[in-house]
Image (tube, rainbow, N blue to C red; front, side, top):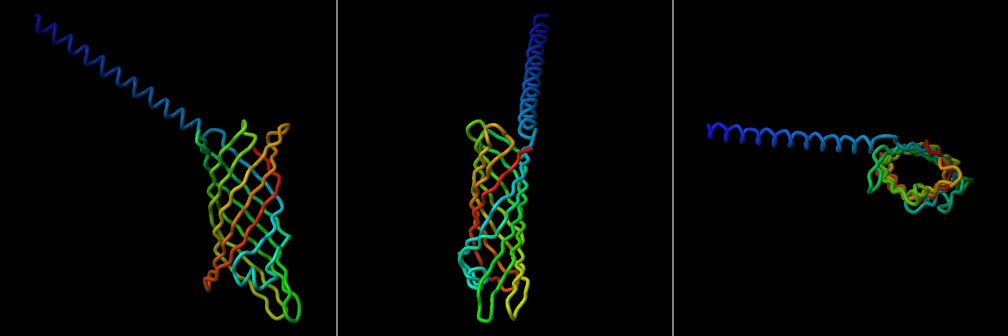
Length: 211
């Protein structure tokens, strides 16, 4: 009888321990699920457009075929989404496009070019001051086209583009969805035929909206 009582008591302790472990696992799973849902809910979607001149650095096409200085006519547009939000920062992606007009002089006349670039970037974002200021770091790649128009030559070149950038977004206090965007990009072009290298810097000043 005593042995049976001890056996039942031990079995009771084992059952209680198993139930306690199961409840602990369920609580942990719920907490992890809540954390995942919290990091995925309400993704931040932003759009912006602004002024983006071109400062060539290296390369015989952008720097040497034209004047090689400052090309002031340029615009930049971007669409970004930030779905993953953590305490150390947020992660997302961005689709961006750029247009720049290049001009120069050659013997016999002038040379003009239109540069169009489209790329996809990975984005890291860290927000400060109650989300009024956001630091963004970007890295990505895509394609670029240059329509080259000289007195005795017309050509269209295709490039693979690698770009990286850093910038800030400042949201106006009265309108939290409206922001002023300031970025600094470096873009590197590789000719898909001869492998020629061209690099240029693009500062960007624009206005954005957060959805």
